[in-house]
Amino acid sequence: MSDPDTDATFLLYGAYGYTGRLVAEAAVERGFEPILAGRDPEKVEATASEFGLPHRTFDVREASTFVDDVDAVLNCAGPFEKTADPMVDACIDEGTHYLDITGELSVFERIKRRGDEAEEAGVTLLPGVGFDVVPTDCLAAHLKRRLPEATHLALGLDASGTISKGTLKTVLSGIGDGGAVREDGDLRWVPVGHKTRAIDFGEGLKRAVTIPWGDVSTAHVSTGISNVEVYAAVPPEGRRLLAATKYLGGVLDAAPVQYLLHRLVDRYVEGPDERTREEGYALLWGEARSPGNRLVSRLRTPETYRLTVETSLLCTEKVLSGEAPTGYQTPASAFGPDLILEVPGTERVDLDGDEVVERVGGPEADDEATTRTT
Ligand SMILES: NC(=O)c1ccc[n+]([C@@H]2O[C@H](COP(=O)([O-])OP(=O)(O)OC[C@H]3O[C@@H](n4cnc5c(N)ncnc54)[C@H](OP(=O)(O)O)[C@@H]3O)[C@@H](O)[C@H]2O)c1
Image 1: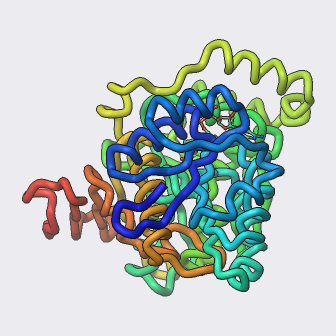
Image 2: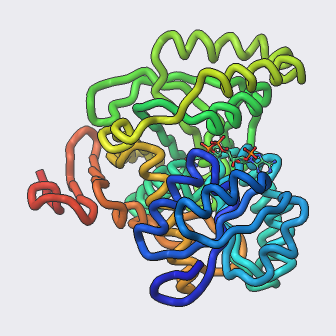
């Protein structure tokens, strides 16, 4: 690989998946030379030769001997339930920084517990450098900065566009686990969609339901706020499906049902096309509350996969150039709440009650969007 500015190297695991390929392509455009890797020799080789990059083929359980000479690993192979633990083991053993694009709550919780070991090894563990959780994590840290005495945090997302095979398989694999919220500092397992609320993401009110998004783990680390809920805008048919999972959880978890669902995904699901990635956008919302106070901030970002490519490379670049503290980190604990504003096409709005008090654009913002008070 090498970071164009530092000579540091990174290995991109899961490089021939839908998201991994997008990351590889964008990395080359930016002058990086990552080593592409994955478990299927033919697919790794084909992708590497397409992009003119070096490659390695290995099973994630044998990662140690393949990551000992690189500075960082960016893991894009999911479900991360299967790939994160062995890759984290290898990275801690070999003194290699670890990043991934997981959104899986249990994976965040497990990697968090490795923080002391990572600290001792001088390694940064930074999961969640994709759409989940960079924008919401930055929003959480920004709200904490606006309201330091906050005791309750609610985050929400409204993402347009379709999803990839890998994302859908990851969602299906975890569907029987139910939902989760953080209460008084502890994780509490609840049914998915156990709460609903109407949220204005910036385009009028939408009905949203609670989901076990990664922020239920990460926002607590980034902000210290003990009560965290995450909501997703879901159309009525989606809410009915979620309600059904309350009763079907055990059935959906059964191996034959999972096999069938994964086969259906392989057969019928494609990731969003280039036009959808270019034209789509995502809306994020966050609310911090303390006794007697309520503040809201919102973000508008590029489409979720485009954002994942941007944020994963941005975070990798920062880790390689030595900007990240060692130990377990969240995107905002490593780089601060304004990290997301470094992504072109991002805009943040602050509200006090219902009134807009500040609007801040990202690097591509026009004059009107840049810092304004209304
Ligand atoms: N944080 C975010 O916002 C965000 C954004 C995009 C994607 N994601 C997550 O990233 C993951 C990949 O998504 P995708 O769209 O790229 O899916 P995809 O196209 O299905 O690709 C998945 C990749 O992971 C590899 N893989 C899966 N299990 C593996 C294992 N046990 N060992 C080694 N490699 C394994 C696959 O290799 P094989 O073909 O050999 O199985 C493939 O290269 C999913 O979990 C998705 O949820 C998160």
